[in-house]
Length: 321
Image (cartoon, rainbow, N blue to C red; front, side, top):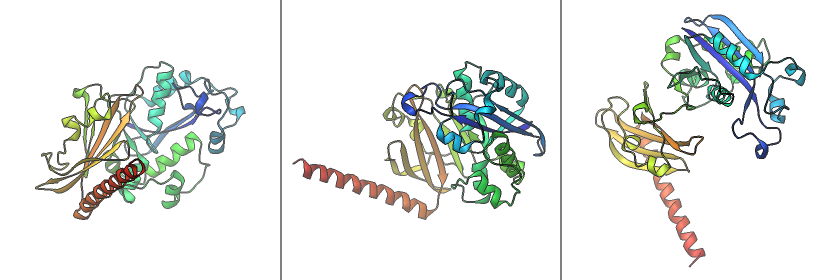
């Protein structure tokens, strides 16, 4: 088994969203990766610039962030050639690690655009080192920038940031401040491929929470009527917990609930509804144990939302008697 620490740089339509290619919003222009063995020792590296085929000039934000110039693309190869070499370099026993959650999704989107068969399994589990750093060193919720974590850990900054290989290298150095056990206990799931049916629905269990990824539904109303989606099994014992506060919406696509397990106490449920490329929606549900104080916060959040809705209705009635 090898860890493949991946970083991508990508470009977007320089003319803005109105003229972007809807099939490829972000075009990969550089792939960088380092390979670590099971003990987190670096054994190899990969880096190649990719010649743009969709957006031939760089977006102004891309120019500000990445260390690439027009001359770097002159002798570059096209994405299909580079991607095939990268896939071969990764090998059959690759475990992918990234800084953040976007790289593998964008890699699969670029593969699909060029009709390149995906080498990735379903479900695609990977390791988000940004998230794992927060779990091990901080509060589980914060998400620091790569450079700020390098500073926090007093790792020497020997090469510039914002090139694919250098950022992959820095991510690997942060991994070396973690243990393989800390990494492997905190996988993430990539959502580019989602379950096609109920049999494929994803159930993951972690130390403090569980995660469920549903099959697609035609809309959020259908999703929130599905018994599996709205169930609240305890994340510790998997027994059905009693609802104290039923699912209520916060914003357009998030729902929360409060449940209680006789053995493990209060549980917070959260559902995020996301849309697929074909406008179907799917649910990502987490259930985690919480303190009594956090349970009161959920109750208060619902009461505040209820009051806001009441005031909004009154305002509309007063405006339109």
